[in-house]
Amino acid sequence: MIRRPANRRAFLAAAVAVAAGAAAAPSALAAGSSGGAPAGAPRAAGPGARAATYVDFHGWSTAADWESGTADGTRVEAESRPAVVFDAPAGTTEYTDPHTGTTATWEYATWTSPRHEPSVPASELIASWNAHTPAGTWVRIELLGTYSDGTDTPAYTLGVWTAGDGEDVPRRTSVDDQTDDKSAVYTDTFAIADADSGLRLASFQLRATLYRAEGGDAAPALWRLGAMSSDVPARYEVPAAEPGVGAGVELEVPRYSQEIHKGQYPEYDGGGEAWCSPTSSQMIIEFWGREPTPEQLEWVNPDYADPQVCHAARHTFDYQYQGCGNWPFNVAYATTYKDMQAVVTRLESLTQAEEVVAAGIPLITSQSFIESELDGAGYGTAGHLMTVIGFTEDGDVIANDPASPDNPSVRRVYKRRQWENIWLRTKRKDADGKELSGTGGVCYLYFPTELTAAQQEVLGRLGVV
Image (tube, rainbow, N blue to C red; front, side):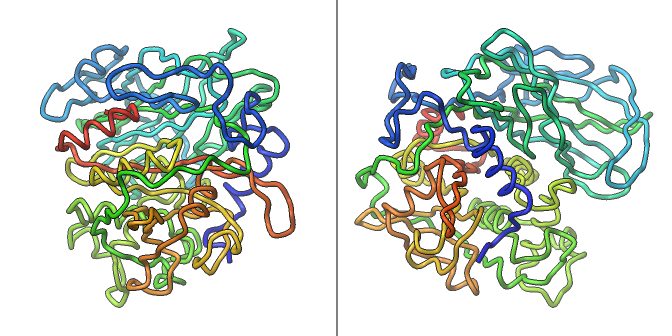
């Protein structure tokens, strides 16, 4: 059973992995299926750092970070949560919403990051952002990249985002059909078109454009902006990691099933059976003590259980992708809650996941598999999100899997080696033997602004704080 539609991300990932060799980040530098690091991969520096083989996360979130960028109409607010804020219009522009046909004039202001050179030239990049978009405001995030051959990418839109979905803002959307002959954007993911060519993304900037209604005084803001760039080895099998610091740790995370919402609000990705991503997001948001207000949930049918899951689906829905599984949109939704932060990144091993959980931070992981590859799941999927909340004493994975028939059955224990491989691999085969892609360790990390020293340390090792 496929728990979320395969018509968008699964189709694109398979097409790129097979025809172009990049959406799942298979690296031309990989040495077969041994799972080893690419030859000559750079090493991370700094206290407690480990080998940085193929993933680089870099973000901007401090006052110094914001001051280091280029502002046009924005200002830096260096308060308890530093931000780039709309100050004065840099100009006006017309935008026609492709989903409603409405054309409106908007004032805008921009912030552009310094240029960043990833620790390893990348075949793939996924951006994420934490933004405040009060009524009548929205943001556009763009990638301005330079290839390893010295030429530049187009200015790629990686998302048009707003927390709202009323008539006063455009629809939240990804942008299709963005490509040159070297790369493309697939919903939320930039990918090199032919990884085997050796071409890579050598450096990049991110540009955030903040919009508000013409003549308005609203102040959209950006709290965090970053990107995970990577060059993950092409592999069906990954090295096995021995149980580590996470063994015997289990976090108390609320349990929500997407399946009890089957048929509810089909305008959002066909209904609850496809809501693995927002359901997982809501579990972790509530783990951190945040939840929607009763007023925010007034629109939900009072006969529906767990209305906050419906709310999450509505407010992560991508009107172009026609689904709730846009990775950065889920991250952005999580940060609409007070003092929450979030990123999309990749982890390179189950050891890193254990370290995150041991520090008290659950994670949301993306994986795909056929039923026989994950004992106890009872389904196969072209793409599914679940939460990792702990590890048994033997190191098996404890997951809150939203693809469960009811809330009490959401907690699952999956065999360590099986789960590790389906999450970290970049290549797989379906039940018919067709070669498809894997996500290569993609995950969401949600965490509050107030962190313990241990949490700061483990996130710091991942480049996140």
